[in-house]
Image (cartoon, rainbow, N blue to C red; front, top):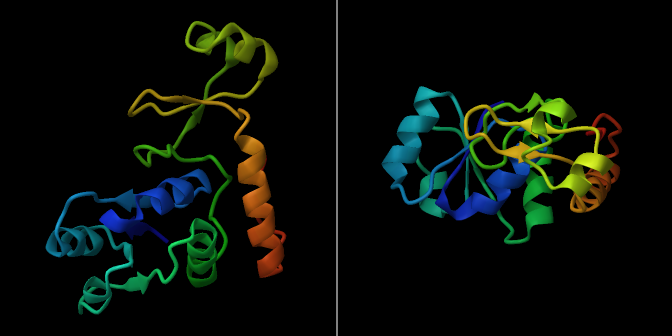
Length: 159
C-alpha cells in the first residue's frame, strides 16, 4: 500500500521509508494538494489533522499520538508489516535504493567506513549513499519491539 504523510508527519514519513514503505511526503501544502496527490497515486493519507482526516473522497488514517513509536505501531496495525526489506527506500526522497559495491563508493565515504562496512546502498535519484552505521542498532531495536508487540516474525532487519 502506498502512503502519503502530510506536513505534520515528516519524521514519521522518514521512518516509514527506512522500514520499506512507499511513503510520499508533502511539506508546506494545503489539504487540497494532499487530496489531489492521494487520489492521483492511490495513496492512503496519514495525518494528524482532524479536518483532513474527515474529508470525503480519500482514504485517511488519523495518527493519534505525537510519539514516533506509537505512530509507527498505528501504521503497522492499519496497513500491515512493511512490504519489503528495511532500508529499501531513500529516507529523503522515497525512491528505491540500489546496492552499491564497496569499490565504487570508496571515494565517497570516510576510509574507516570503507574498511569496516561491506554493504552500501545508493539512491540514484538524489545520489545519497547509505550504510549500516551506528544508528542501525537503534533502528533494529525499534522494529524488533514493534514486531514483538504485533506478534509477527515477518519483518527481518538485515542490511
